[in-house]
Length: 150
Image (cartoon, rainbow, N blue to C red; front, side):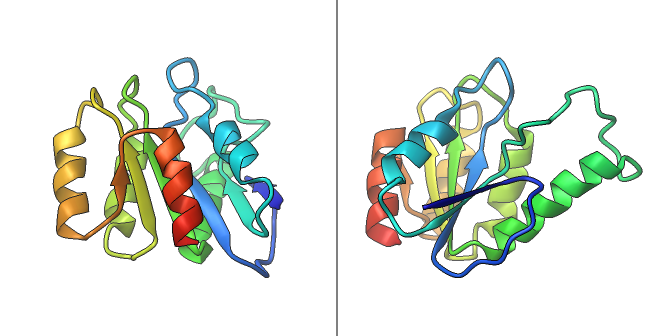
């Protein structure tokens, strides 16, 4: 396994998974580490947007080079990834995750985990149903289905 974190440059040479989903610090668990640890024996590349040097005080505008770099890295990585696993933490609102969900709903790449209690679970359920997106109820199932669909 190879792990690439934002904003690292890379070239993909094998199957890859983008870890999309809730990151809201202090609200969302670090689910990315659970997934990475569970998939560590696979010959894949993990694209992890959880940036080590992220600063919540950065102005989130196109004029901020650090912020722009992050968003562009995420968009390019979502496009390049073989699969996108998307986790909606019920303790968050996750507006960017919902945006990414909409952007890639019809891509055939998504595997979604949306637990009871997520504030827009009904919307997620309907979109997954319409576009035949695999959806599971917990991270353990997300890992299991990801292994099957790689």
